[in-house]
Image 1 (cartoon, helix red, strand yellow):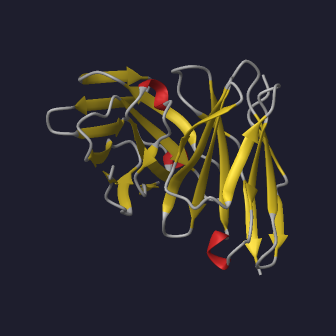
Image 2: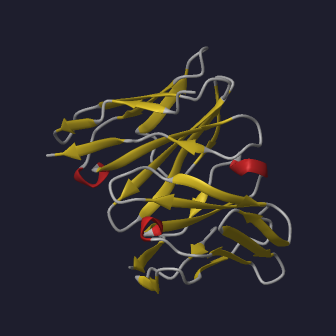
Length: 113
Length: 111
């Protein structure tokens, strides 16, 4: 059974610092990896997608993938109070999550002003 | 560009009834996915429809079913509702291997 594990938190980070969110997955055949942000009472919003080993940067966000270690991370630089949310790691065996995404339970991130 | 739209926003039913939830994908998207987000359980994959066909199914009983229409919109039907079906039901859409984008969900409450 496919599993995605995240530390539930809360993870508390001072404003302006780097927030580091981690995720491990069980299925070595996983091909696609995503980070979604979910504000309380709202739907998940796609932040990053990554498909190959290494780093992928988009603005203040960097996703890191290590398939050998079955590990995905998300770094948020210059953290802002508006980054306070639950971050969901999602994994798929197919490109783009075409077979359906397996989600972790999310890490609750709090940015302290 | 309009995002994924879901209706109704809230739905209240009693045990044993049937619920129908609706989803319109982003224009140009051909795949629709349904997820259940129950308290404490996280987001769980329910169903995937593409080009009118059911392509994959999560670990849910057959009373969870759906369909996709020629315009790519979709319905999720839940029969014989149980208390544990109370959850936020999220629809997502995508085009081919592109990432999924979510709608705002339907909150289903079973009394």
